[in-house]
Image 1 (cartoon, rainbow, N blue to C red):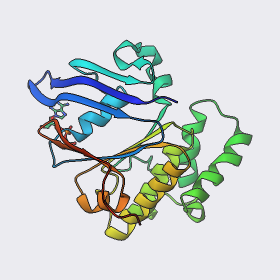
Image 2 (cartoon, helix red, strand yellow; image 1 turned 180 degrees about the vertical axis):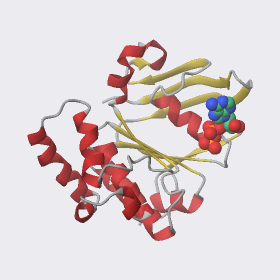
Image 3 (cartoon, rainbow, N blue to C red; image 1 turned 120 degrees about the horizontal axis):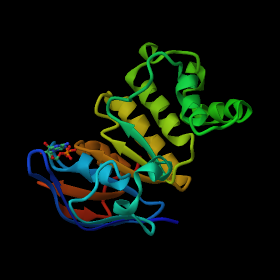
Length: 229
Ligand code: ADP
């Protein structure tokens, strides 16, 4: 199963010459749950983007299994990205589609049959505990419910890795905890989880490995003493 590996990675954004990541060396094994923490601007989002080739390193290499992200041809990017499910602070749901349709759409675009869509979508909605809202539109949902929908959409193609970038940034503490519990459950089922957040409390609740970034550098990497929910 593919690991994620950063080797001597530097990321300098060319538009402003900003050194967002400096000499990152990191190994994330398949099946791990890793929280990436640090204050705003520390480089968390940049690090997550490098994993799914949303950005390429300026120096050094990022591997997913044996694949160096630098070597992926543009036309193969959509296929490569199927390894990853992503969730963000702002949910990114399609406003004119229902919960069901938002999740179904991720299957439609990769050519899954209607029969399979009707079978698979309710299963995943039930797993994230949002099945009863299937026919609602995003604007009718709470933030927590929207994030559960986004998580269902991220999971529906059975990615190897879930990348969650500040997934609780717009949520109240109770909803935040629910999302973290779901990420832990998904991880227990074998999916790698990379969680980027500035919220130390959330990370303590996850109780797993914590990589801390400061000014683009890894300043600590701990198995973590946090407590488990
Ligand atoms: P975090 O997620 O920890 O807030 P980011 O990875 O978003 O950190 O940003 C790290 C630094 O890189 C910040 O100073 C930010 O301004 C800069 N940065 C991020 N994205 C870009 C970009 N596309 N172009 C230029 N600078 C960027």
